[in-house]
Length: 209
Image (cartoon, one colour):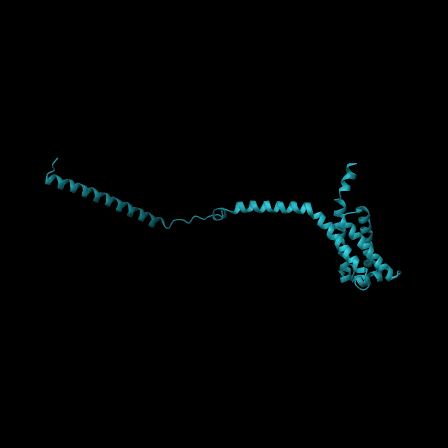
């Protein structure tokens, strides 16, 4: 099929006109879009919340809760044992100091409170009593007798607050001396013993009967 020179030139001219029209339309649309953006101002900045910025936060919170639950479970299973052994260890330690003359800082306070007794006898005897209480608590044996001796001993430790006010109070009944503070801290030990006594297995056995 042969195409005359006139027909070929006409076809080229139509194709050129079409491309020119398409390019012109694209330029017009681009200018219209740019004009709209100029009139409407800058695009608003979309704020991103913490969840969008930190997508791992929910997973971290879940992991932290799981760790907290495991730690709480461990504390529930072992806390009572640590409390009992710790209380017994402190008692045995302080009692052992009283067995050696002049080694315990509470020796003068004991001597002044129990002035009617020979300090060479009463101080070591009190130390042996404390050691026995401490060993009973640490080993978890004879708990009824151990706790009974413990509470009896605690009542005795409070006597200087009544009979030795000059040594235990700076201003009664608010300001304590160092010795007075040493005595009042026994309230914490009494609370610990109450927890130990109330959680013993034999307590549950008595309730079941």
